Amino acid sequence: MNIESESKRDMGMPVAIGIVAVAVIILGAWYYYQKNASVSETPVRNELENKMIRVRLDPLNGSGQMGTAFLRQKDTMVYVDINVLGAPATSLQPAHIHTGACPNPGEVIYSLNASQKGVSGTLLDTSLEQIIDQLPLAINIHASENDLKTYTACGNILETGVVPEK
Image 1 (spheres, rainbow, N blue to C red):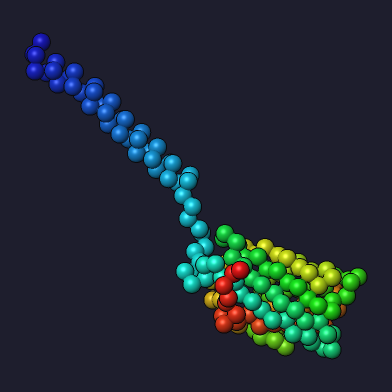
Image 2: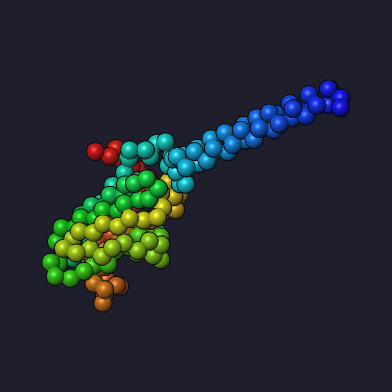
């Protein structure tokens, strides 16, 4: 047997093991990065980090109901918090985000949890950036589930309503 060919064959095994080891390390590092990466699927504009949108809700149709809504970025979602004064203590009042502006907004694009005793909280699968990109929008409170045509409070979502989160 030729000593040179035997030497090459003996070196082939360690080289193959080395290549497999490097491939395992690379795949392991890729898997670790993918598992632990915290990249948001819906990135938020830098100017919207630690900010929220404040919306003033004004009374409509003589309801006397007025209040404030806050839209806050929570990871990849938006939390909508509504507080209305003068709301009935006994009935639920549906709330939505509509296209357009008050007092006559357009179609519903986001359903919110109904206001109970003037309080509602909803988590939406969107971002503040996406909401701003869809403006003009309005938050609308309805008289009741049986009377969706009567609006009791409405507020326009405005980019100028962006304020620092406290």
